[in-house]
Length: 436
Image 1 (cartoon, rainbow, N blue to C red):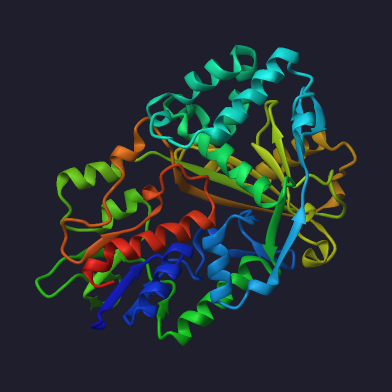
Image 2 (cartoon, rainbow, N blue to C red):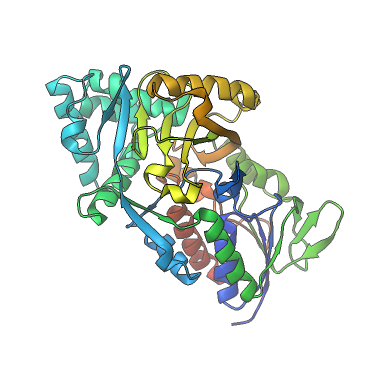
């Protein structure tokens, strides 16, 4: 196979894995990342001396694409599997919902409501053809199977916590995908909820991946925000402010849809409009280090009104020795890209978030919070609107040699790294006719 030059815009897990696949096929690859470090949503930071993931991540036994990548970079033996528990904060009380019986004992629902809740989950787990669900609003589907009370008391707060008011335009395939992933976790864990993590977190994963890329001859240029991608008769050109233009045989843009629409010059009006119209949800996610554990639930759902949409007690999954003996907690709030929460100063968020957390865990004192940092990302995942699969952008663009591979092409996703790697593998197959 003839070697070609490929430029990849974006050094997240998608861009880095794409670079690895292309390099393995004998191509010359250069990755351009705007941030000072690679990783994107999987990037890491330092929290009071503890280096860990900026956002929460978890691995399932069924995440075969991710596990294969970890094996490829030499980390297969560094994955630890843990049986976890799940909680829910409802009507001012914290309860366990770690199994079906506990879920069906929720105080906010009567016997018939809980039966219909269980039936809804069971039906969702048995559906294989999701395309019909994509044509039906999620509210309509859930009301039909669960009933009004169960929808309003259980499903609606959870939908709003993840989608905001965009839930009104979201298809039923969203809840189907969520149920399917949860069932895969339990099936692969022999009925138990077993999740995994890599010792050292994604700092270790990214370091191993970068080392592998360097051995394959891939060049990674950080702090290199791409201003424009141009099509020329001799091939696409990448322009970076203050740097000489760089020409390639092919360019892959992994940026989110609105950024791709802005930087790719020469798109047709239809292509540009399609990219600009894709709706995203963003995230404001606080990371806290605490002196003591909270309640031992890896994930706690919240149905009461709260400023954040859930509690992820990471140290209920990851050994606390990874956090210097402390408890790492994530408090995510999923919001629209233009939500005012993005502009609230960190100290104000700390006051509001810690006070709310203390309503849930009354033993938590102010002095127990030893660190508080906030990550803000305005576009994290596309909202799965009605008929979304019919509007998925093509990987091929009208600009010769320029390709688009990003999260907008993940249909029925639940926002996890395994889906990203599966997208890369599909992209490499699809772009094989272009030299990949």
